[in-house]
Length: 151
Image (cartoon, rainbow, N blue to C red; front, side):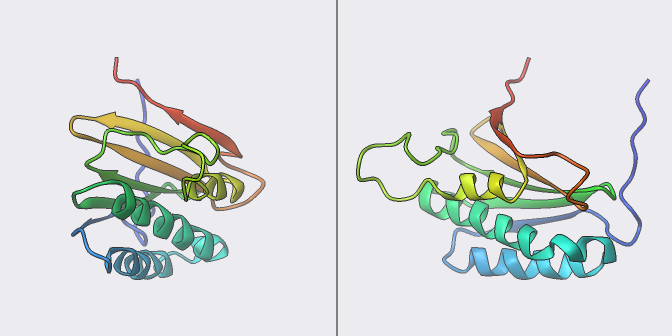
């Protein structure tokens, strides 16, 4: 038997469909900042969460052809950012692409911020999850990108 803990009532989950547009990262940052403002406990990491959102949504513009879905959740100890897009290709860390290729630093930066990053393949795309602890001494820790495979 598993118990599901709902997020605090003052910070309900937020889900926003973002059109493929050069304005999508700015819209995502504003939505995230407003969502975080409803939770006093998240104010300590608000800048980091907004940066993570900006990087993940920008990646959808650079590497996919379709819209994306931004989902923000918290359980009171961790804020999770999830960005679903239309590409089945997992994000690549810098140094794993072709020589001279630009980019590849965003995911590494997100991990450096202390986020646990996972990639979940879905039909016709993927969801990139980044979980950040509300308190630096508790939470997901600094882990590399991992992929979840459906069983």
